[in-house]
Length: 180
Ligand SMILES: CC(C)(COP(=O)(O)OP(=O)(O)OC[C@H]1O[C@@H](n2cnc3c(N)ncnc32)[C@H](O)[C@@H]1OP(=O)(O)O)[C@@H](O)C(=O)NCCC(=O)NCCS
Image (cartoon, rainbow, N blue to C red; front, side):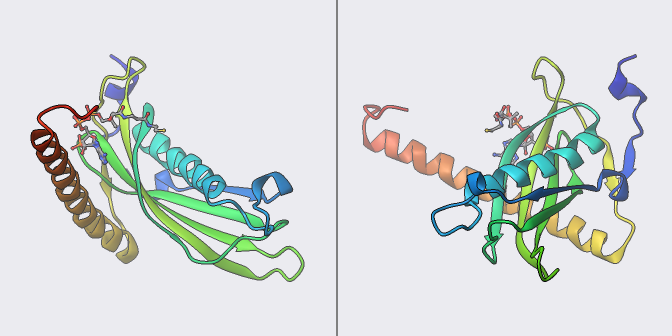
C-alpha cells in the first residue's frame, strides 16, 4: 500500500490553510523601492504550493498561475503575509487561492496588496499524475470559492482550447514552416 492509498478521500479547506511572512529587503525591490512583481509571484507560488502539498500529500507542480491582481505597491521594509488554501480539487489538479497583505512596520497599517489563483497538479516521484482527495467546503466563503473555482476551470479550458486552435490555424497557414 503506498502513502496515497492511506490518505482520506475528502479533506476540509481548513486542513490546507497555509501562511508565510517575509520582510522586504533591498534585494527584493525595484529602483523605486517597491517589491518586484516577479518576487511577489515567487512568494505566491511557494505559499500556494504549501496548501497544495497539505491537500495532496504528494509532489505537486504548478500548472498555471492566473488572475493576479497587484492592487497596491509593497514598500522596502514592509512585512508581507501570504495566506493560501485549496478552493477546489478536481481529478488530479487543485485550484489554490492566495491572498497577500503588506504591513507597514512603523504605523502597523495592514493593506491587502494582491490576490491570485493557481492550479497545482499532483504527481508521484517519477512525475506520473496522481489523483487527489476532494475538498469539502464548510463555510459560506468556502462554498462561494468552491463554486467560483469550477467557473474559472471552465474558463481556463475554453481559453486553452482557443489558443491550441489558433496555433494550429497559424501552422496550417504557414504550411508547417514555423518553428514550434
Ligand atoms: C502540469 C502538467 C503536469 C500537466 O500535464 P498533462 O499531461 O498536460 O496533463 P493533462 O492534460 O492530462 O491534465 C492533467 C490535469 O492537469 C490540469 N492541467 C493541465 N494543464 C493545465 C493548465 N495549463 N492549467 C490548469 N490546469 C491544467 C488538467 O485540467 C487536469 O486536471 P484534472 O486531472 O484535475 O482534470 C504538465 O504540463 C507539466 O509537467 N508542466 C510543467 C510543470 C512545471 O514544471 N511547473 C513549474 C513551472 S516553472
